[in-house]
Image (cartoon, rainbow, N blue to C red; front, side, top):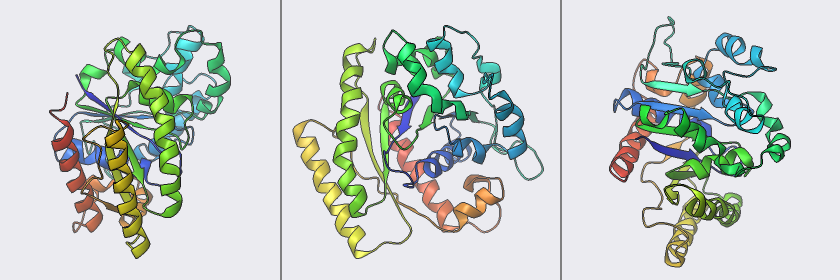
Length: 303
């Protein structure tokens, strides 16, 4: 059974999508893992990145009023008692292509987002069962979890119903964070918000498994004295949360850190990801490859 990992932060611009997409690419390409990325953000940044614009428009946007090829349909099926999500068409298989249109990473699949996810907060009030269990029940019902080594979930920058569903479904949640004072101030509130979903999961999941915080991934454009101090503040707060039993013992800052360099937007502009970017190996590629190895070593035997 695959390990479900959610990337969550209430703050935007911290690298959730960049990390989810490029980490997934290296897990699939370099470590030969079978990866599914589920995009739950109505902005669909991960979906746009992994699919060509033409393909996204054809397969996802053309379905705005009948969005059966997207993660939104998973929620529609539960809320409106539909039965339209089908993994054969809902999962975009081997979606990363090279510049010639050939499959570049055979083991990297996607369930794309649809803009109609913005309607979820209004529509989910019609669902009479446990509202944050919809995603997990769908993944189990469609036997999707057994198909992959890791299922990575990219969330919107909030604690919406989509994000709460992702946490409830997870084995692990990871917090990408920029070590600056503003992000640090929001960290306790994020942990408190996530803890509510974790407590419900422990009580209501059939396996009574409480998702655990797998750690924090730091991203920054350049390291400064303030960032070094904030990193220590975050580390000290993690220790306090561990002592209080709020965070698990494996919750810590990843050794691998992501620096936002031009290689990342360059890859986006070329319609590819770092794992398939040709030419001389860049520092960004090395960082994500290191992160993939650290990630897999940390979690592969945990469950």
